[in-house]
Image (tube, rainbow, N blue to C red):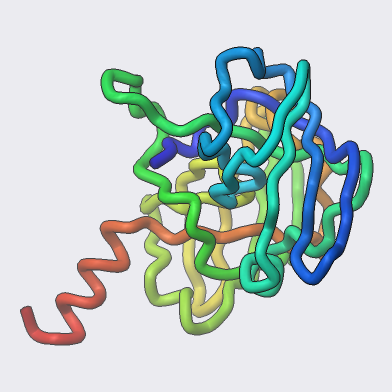
Length: 196
C-alpha cells in the first residue's frame, strides 16, 4: 500500500526488453535500507526490487503491466515519481493507493491559474464513472483531488510544490499518465451495481 505522496524522483538509467521489460532506476533513496523484494511505486505502478546497488535498483515489468500502463513509453533519462511502501505507523498524507493502475488517461489541456496549474484529462470511458468531484485519484502515483468531472473528462490543480518535487513539472498536453481510481469509489460502485 502507498499514499500517493511522492518521496523521490528517480531516473531511468537502463532499459532492456526481453519479452518483459527490465529497468534500472537511479534513486536518492538510501538503497542500503531497501530489501530485495521490496515494493516501490514507480509512476504509480507497484514494482518489485529484484537487484540493487548504491543509488539504484532494478525491476522486472511484465508485458501485461506494460500493456496497461505508460511504462512502455519510458526512455533512458525519463524522470519517475517514486514512493516506498507504507509501513505501519506511517502518516497517511494522501489517500490509500494500491499501485495497481486501472488505466491510462491523457492530458488534454493545461493552464496556469495563479501559482498553480489546472490540468484536464480524458479517462477511459469504463473508468470515468468512478471519478467524482472532490474525490481522489492517483495520477503517475501522485494523490490528487478532482476538481470537476464532465463525462470522461476530469480536472485537477497542481500546486507549485507538487510540480517541484515530482515529475509533474515536465508534463505537457498529450502525455499519457497512469490512472488509479480511488479504491473506495470502486467498491461503492460495485455495491450499487448489485443493489447492496
